[in-house]
Length: 296
Image (tube, rainbow, N blue to C red):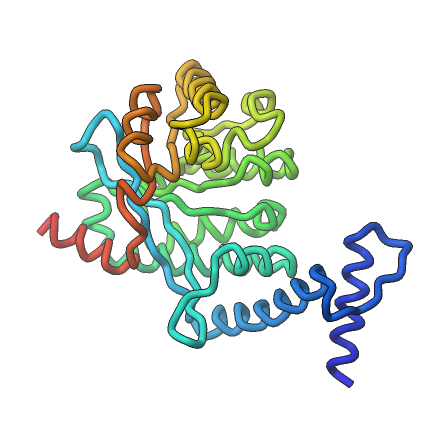
C-alpha cells in the first residue's frame, strides 16, 4: 500500500545517505528514518504553501555602528505558518526544502513577492535609499535560468539594482565555486550588492575570499554569540574585520543580542550589526508602511 511504499523509499534514501551498498531496515525508532518521514510530510506542506501563497515575508533591520543617520537596511526573512496558528521552525523548514530540492522554487517565490511589494512603494524605497538583503540557496546557484529570472523580476518591478543585496553562504559559494563566481559577477555587473553569509565558518575562508567579488562579509553567528566570553571568537572576528578593511569590504555582525556584544563589535571595528538588540524581524508590509509614513 501507500504507507509501505513510503517507508521503503525512506529506507532506500537512508541507505544512500549512509554510504550505499548496504541494507537499511525501516524502524520506527530509527532517528534518521523518523526525520526523513517528518521531512516528507513537511515538504508536502511547503509545496502547498508555495502553491497557495501562504508563506510570509519578514524584514529584520541592520544598523551601521558608526552612523545612526545611515540609510535603512534590512534582511528579508521567510516564515511559514503551521496549521495551528503558530510557525514552522525555520531549521526544519529549510532542512526539508534542501533535502528535497525545493530551494530554487522557494528562492523564486521570495524574489518575486519581495520585488512586487517593493515595486508598489518604489518611490519611497528610492527616496530613502533603503537596502534589502535576500538569501539565496546553493541549489539556486546551480539553476542556469536563475540569473535571468532575477534580472526579469528587477526590470518588471523597476527596482534600482543598487537597492538589492544578495546573500550567499560561504559554504554554498565554495561548493559551487565556478557557478558561484559567474553568478556573483552577473549580479554585480547589474549593480546589485553581494554579501558572503556565515563567513569564517569554513576552514579555508580567507583562501577563498580572493575568488569572490563581493561587497560584504556577514560574520558567522557562532563567533558573535560568545564573543564576550570566548577569546578565540573575539580573535576570529578581529581577524575577519581587519582583512575586510584591507579589501575594502563591509562587515556585519549577526546575533547582536546584548549591549556588551554591541560595544565589543563596535570597538573591534565591525561596520554593521543585526540582532534582537537592534530590532526583531517584522512583517515586511509593516516595515514598508513605516518607511512610507517616515517619508510622507
